Length: 124
Image (cartoon, rainbow, N blue to C red; front, side, top):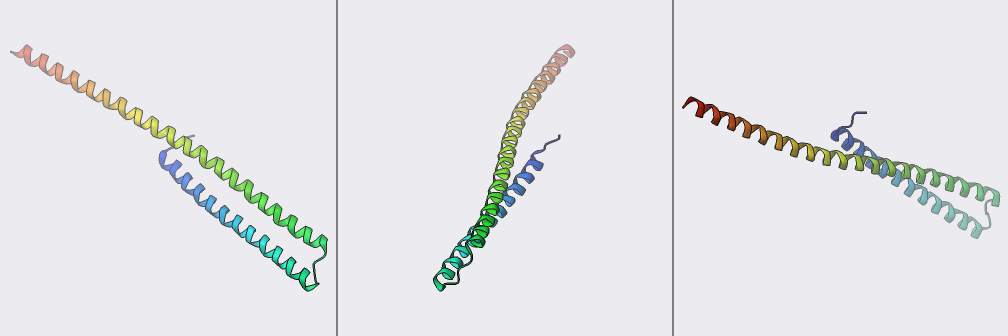
């Protein structure tokens, strides 16, 4: 599998956006749950409460939706961490390769200058 820094950065941005979407969806679920609890409380006060079985069903449904969202966020978090680790590894590798290239270039330059000096001394 070929990984480039650009691909990893793109994947990281995509995951970050997905995390934000999941966060917004989780907030929406929390809001829905609070609204349902307020509705149930208002109905109880008015004497027209929903049957307990229906209330439990609604609460279970909201809890299931919340659990699915938590799992999705966890999966995205894990992916994001893996991408961040890979990006850091590639950046370090890139830095080390640049240092090696620099050393190699300097060594080549020294050899070139040395051979030019030797050639000029031979001409004299």
